[in-house]
Image (cartoon, rainbow, N blue to C red):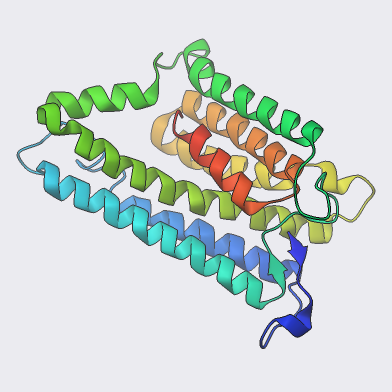
Length: 249
């Protein structure tokens, strides 16, 4: 993230590490909306289709995804009013126009591919189930709703995009908050956001889904943190890759 000139921002104040920590906290609290459906019949696709028919399930997922998207956008708008914009920072590999050079993109794509491979392979290596999560989820929906299962899959995609937008924001704000404290040389190269997000999301995954998913979540979040650093702390780029990676976790 880079600072916007304060005269251009109405009623703006300097965004210190405390403010960025507050944004990260709000992002994490927003993820608590998932507790509304996590562990209930809504997440057991096909477990009780008579109790939660297709239309109601789609409404729940779309509503939750939309709420997360609105929350993520509101936090970005709030950060801009305080003088911080989710654009490449002064430590990025981007040029003056914000474009990344080929070396930065190569590093970003390498981290992305590594995260996808880890998300697919690592759970099976440590005793978890083997499979490609999106395919397995669609098969469950197809068993429950037949050919109309693709409607639920689209609703799940909205749910996923909204959730990932909030997670990407949490990672970015946490990274910026820690960067405000860690001022030693080379601190900007460390994926602080990935470390914080991995610790928090990994703990949640361990309690709800077991150690295989927890370890996978930690490693994937760490790689997403590296993507955030290599793309110049761009929240937009981080959010896109967060969606692509967490779709397979």
